[in-house]
Amino acid sequence: MLSQGYRFEVPDDNPTIIKVVGVGGMGGNAVKHMFNLEMKDVNFAICNTDRQALMSNPVPTKLQLGDGLGAGTEAKAGEDAARASIEEIRNLLAPPTKMVFITAGMGGGTGTGAAPVVAEVAREMGLLTVAVVTAPYYFEGTDKKEQAREGIERLKKSCDTVLVVLNDKLAELYSELPWTEAYAHADDVLANAVKSIAEIITTQGDINADFADVKKVLEGAGQSVMGSAEAGGEDRALKAIEAALNSPLLNDHDIRGAKRILLTISSSKEHAMKLKEQMAISAHVAEKIQTEARMFKFGAITDKNLGESLRVTIIAAGFDGTNALLDTLGAGAKSVDKSEPIVDEIVEPVEFVDEEPVVAIEEPVTKEPEKEEPILQPVGITAKVDGKQLTPTGLNGTTIVRPEPLPGFKPTQNDDGGTLVLDEEERYDDAELIRRSIEAFVKGQYSASDLERPTFERNKTVLFPMPMLSENEFVRSKLNE
Image (cartoon, rainbow, N blue to C red; front, side, top):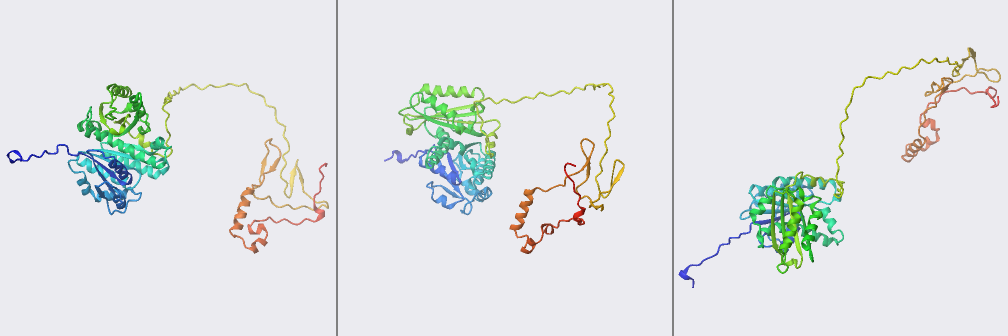
């Protein structure tokens, strides 16, 4: 029996303040994976325009957006469906929630269109909002990459920080694995990103960073990147931090440009991190960031699943020129080899100086008069050569009548200024004429009766009339004459 008849109930002083919301198919799969990992002190929810995908997901908290028939690949359809369910989204993010993770795949319909709407609601409610999203593979087409770019830009307007994981970088890490294992590892990457931030708040560690610490690092940080790696054996600490800083997931970013750093070290209780390992990792990071980081938070987490291994996760944010990663979503983006320094070529201006003109004085040259040669006129019906009029005749003295020159012929002067000759008539390309003839025949342009007619009649070629010459009127000549 209770003393004095009083019953005391201990209030729950640690309500769950972190909620992870998966939006669309990719986001739903990622949250499903986290849910199966049994992460503590985190609530999960999924939103989708596809009712069937919602019903097949084991995550208990579900929100159908729109009519449940899906959004296809149209981001506008996903956005409209989310705005139609705006009140349900507010209820989903209601207190005691203080921090929300939004995970989605960029480039599709629901994730790209609805995730920014969820972020807008979270921002209106004053929640610390972190988006962890994937960007499409390079081979998925320019339309999808452009849609992903627009979705990420919209997320950046409402989220405190946006962590973008490029699918191409995941392919670099897991290209040798079977596709089922590779996609499972991709879910692990998203889960680890959320877990490394969430558990630094919720999990009891030897070195704990509370929600206020995490909020200072991530609030208004803009675009961020993450590197994570595990290592075992001797020098596991140094191996893990070096691998994390060289991770493809950093998207070719050097953390030296980051203004905010959140570092977590996870180890099992049996093989807990040693003090010298913590010092080695911290010193290595400090050497990399030098004095540029304005905020640096460190947390230690106990994870029984790690065994003898040690895991290091580093999240870097607050970069200048954060559009560099978005530029990689363009078709044909080139990777940069960091091993070689980038040298900008400096072109010095050229000064133009007005100079006085130099006049060259040459001695006069006496030019000998050129010998004039007789110019031969083209012979028509009559012509004059050397002042004598000539009339072409046949063998029997009959005057030969020649037709007028054809169009396209005109007298020109040779380079030597002497004899005038006739220009060659302009000719069509034979191959083009043959192609046209074959094409006309195949298309049935000419009937059988047309083909019986001469070509010049079918083509309406104008022939110049020429009088017939008798045999004795031909002009005969010999080459040796």
